[in-house]
Length: 196
Ligand code: OGA
Ligand code: NI
Image (tube, rainbow, N blue to C red):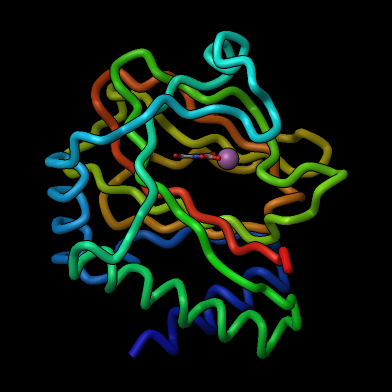
């Protein structure tokens, strides 16, 4: 059912290394995931991988996260989609992905995430990133855009976090940042990993 979308993503990863897809999945799924995130109370302050200093992390990112699980049919459906994509990537791009991890993120008013790479040079565990947005009625004045740069830090694209927009990119090639949100912003960030 998602084969066409998977093909589009695979082709883009080969050609450009990234893709931005508006209206990617079922609208009901986008709504259901948003409702789940809105009702979930257990969000924790996010840290930077490899850092134990929450104070320092707070200067660089201010979102709160909750890891996805299969507690709801919406999460299961989303994970079924990402699992199908994993199979296609491994089959066609031979990346040897072992698993996918993902979390909901809330950016409250003023929250941001400074420019970063999702994969660190010394630990290439994260190979492909997905970001999926859950915000209906997001206007240009609401901020919170994702800005994507190329390997030389040249601007590539600015993405409004509209509900049902999906972004996929190679984790070690595209620095990106989240501009300060002016109202509460929901997303799901996920990573395909190659750890044993
Ligand atoms: C991340 C990230 C982007 C977003 O969590 O690493 O870059 O738009 N998130 O939520
Ligand atoms: Ni990131």
